[in-house]
Length: 71
Image (cartoon, rainbow, N blue to C red; front, side):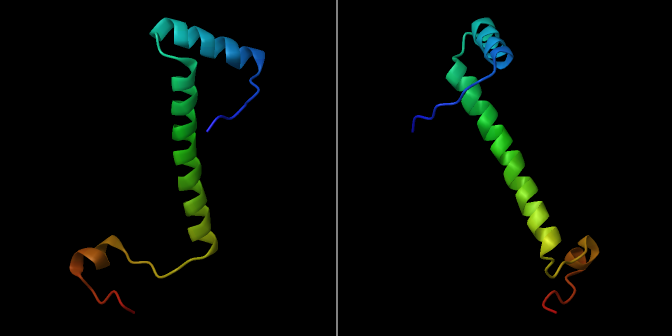
């Protein structure tokens, strides 16, 4: 899916230099950066949701001992 993104001059220059130094395409680095950042954002979103909507939680000790985890 093609997407158009405007990059600032300094970011574009850095991306050009990195691509030239490594022999990889700019698209490769843009895709890699987006995937890594999306992973971080998804983790952050899940953590924020869990803090806002707390559910039943168990300690590591409870899990290791197999205590009644149903209630």
